[in-house]
Image (cartoon, rainbow, N blue to C red; front, side, top):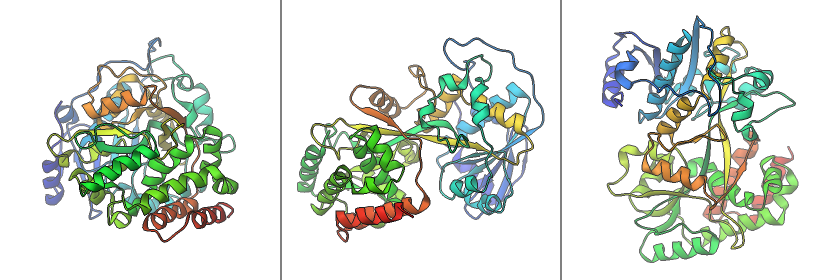
Length: 458
């Protein structure tokens, strides 16, 4: 499959050219916050989707043609892989429905349109809630998102008679007083990554994690690194999966931000293990102030054995992975010997603007994303998990890393807990502060738990 050239797009952005070609309308958000309109012949550049329908065992249904427009705000990274998924899917959607789609797309798109959303405007009919600069909590609280609860009760996957509710993992869908404002395009999880050339097998508990890190330290290699500027990587890749290993009930108490959960002996035990690891000197120096690119490059260059990250890591760093590097994923090892490695699954969501004038088209796109071929297209470019509870990926165009990760996720080596709650910005920021302060040795476990408890009570 052909790919859009990153160099070509960069040249067009720098030159400010306007291409009058056919196909979906793509507006690229660039670093200087200027935009370029590219009307590209997407089929010639990226190819189309397959012909597979929505879900196994479903009957095909002929859909009525639609008309009109649809605008979507889509954060994509700079590798080009994510953009390719969106242009492919949008092209297939346009051909299937007759709707004309405009993609507001790029690495700065959330920042560019944030002020408009917060001012009560609606730059797009659908927004992909991903990447930096997306104020989805404030957008939801101010009534900018359409309630999808009734839609989910009856909607079918586009082109089939299969109900979305029967095929999608609804355990990750968050409800607020009966309302549903976001639904998953894909699902994801976070954990630990390592190079299998350096580390033969993943540590399955804290004692093994310390032992491997000690061996690395003897060779002058740090045990792990993380992006301290985004310390929630450690929260959701290392700490919360270790909390989840105590069971779903306790995990949800912590995830819901219940004040007493942060004083629980189990939560303190996880934080104590984390502090012990940091105090032993296994963290790469500078981790607490590193951005995500710096930390990832340090890891890829062999300065640390492990890094906390999500399933997007390979696609994001594809241009920088050294030859022969064997990128491998595992669950958090911050657990006791008698516990099973656990992964926390959360949704990567789409939301519909409550002010959209293209509601039928927007809902049609939401139905379209749950087709098998559409899910596989996104998975092949993002390396995420499907939003469906079951999907055969045997013949999917996946990298070896993505396929190995999916096999690991679906194996009996790990337990899986679904998360359908989200913290407030206050508690999230406090947790990030706590992680860095504990990492640097300036905060005790009791102080960390007291601070989290205090903010949870607000």
